[in-house]
Image 1 (cartoon, rainbow, N blue to C red):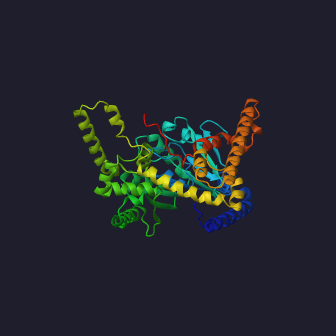
Image 2: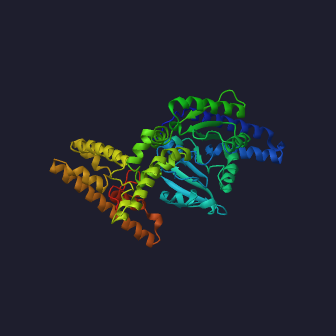
Image 3: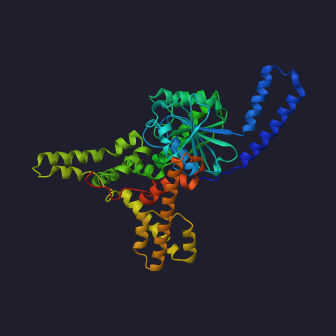
Length: 454
């Protein structure tokens, strides 16, 4: 996923305007001097503080299950915010620029934030890890070296409103006064519900600048998209009493959105899905994360009917091993159509890499990289005709594993000796590199060899 490279010229204008306003306030305060009343003086001071901090809070809000976190992941080019089953986000998460990746957690009643591994973010900001924000997380601050976040932009993820979890709605409402601008996210499956329109009225009490995003646009048929967009635009104009609105149709999960549309719109796709026993467990849940209840209800009905018929026939039969027949009804990665697609794409990338490392320039570039995981290393050298290149790849992998082992031992030693302050970044992330090199990166690792007996 590539990071978006936005036009930052508007932020340059914003910075210059901020500096000009600060000069005007400072001049005014100097001229009035002691004649300012206590409240007016404090107002000037607070305004100067806000200008000095140089932060612009762009807050993403909307009803639960609208794809807010997925949209933010797409904007920054990283699958770093947790996404999945509804409702997910339970605490405010602020993304801001930093020279290295860093996650800090501030809890109610504490003065200083605690730094934790980014891999644990779900423990603090999701309903599963922190239900109803029982952990009293005031803010999860995630620093990333992402260009989009430069110039003081704070990109804020908020809990979805309108779910049965009232604490999530309250958390988002409490944060609204701190917003400089808002991205209001709705989606095409059930656009602009009553909860959303009521929420929009509340937003307008605190924020003047609102951008509207219509997510999951790929779920709508080509002929329906224009009608849906016109309905949303007309409704928003009446609510906002504005003649010109900025409305952006997007899809933050195009592949599975296309699959859901095919399943919900085409009987032939539903029959094929049922005949192939659907997707494997992993890709079924990934589809669920982007789909609507309506889309899944339509798309999966043929599969449910097929399973019912198969199980009924099995119940009426005298088969000696019915358990094995039931297990055969569970789709496995070897036959999952999405898994096959990923394997084919991976094979093409490995073929390109194999050609690259056969060149002198390619080997120099690869030598400075972390290389590939063990499974892909085996695939890479399996058909490599050059023994010299195979030896180079194996020597490189052996060196990287030795470096990881050394970094992990140093990390553990310094922790035991209470010298965590002396750990370098390589030692801190060695455990993660070890997992990636042995099991593969989370985003591209699929259970090809999953035990079929489980």
